[in-house]
Image (cartoon, rainbow, N blue to C red; front, side, top):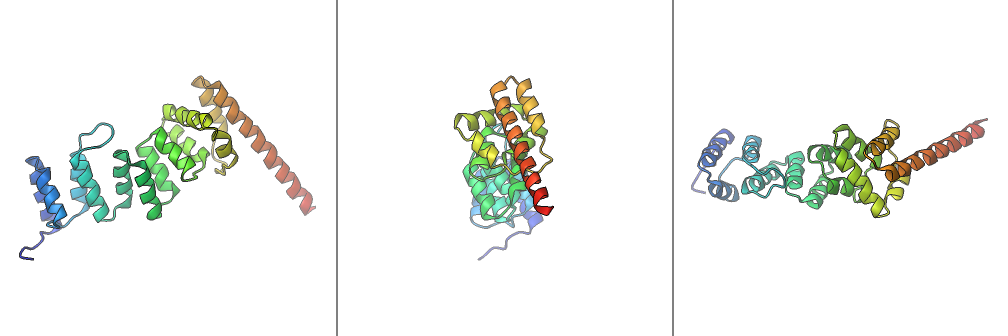
Length: 214
């Protein structure tokens, strides 16, 4: 080539100057033609330039995603995909790059939605207890209840409860209380029934284990 690609700091200055003039078209051309040394600060300034309040559909967010993917910042790549409403793509990307369930729960914490929560439980097989804990801890009560309603209406709630293997730290009784507080008595009874069944099962297993060792 007849040109030299500017260093990362100079590339950042070029992008910042172009943003001052609202020349996203120019930045897109530079990125497409590999005229820049892409780096995290460039991705960050493009993302901060996004003014979308809900789902991101602006060019600045799209360019930020392109940079994050180029520099292999997988966490921010799935973040941008989720902000664009591309939840299946975000989850597929996370799976492809083996980011693990903790990263997906962090994504739910950062960009909470019923659709994402349901996908994590039904498509990715995350424990519903851990997903509910994430929502409760971050005060996403509306999404907490909405998720349980979606699962109940699709007849998936009993199945995911029975398949749950969340750690003992999950506070199921708090989930029941929250449902009651929010006026969802039927859901609360469903969870209470699961708790009673699980307790009986654990006690039976403990009894069998004790008998076997005697």
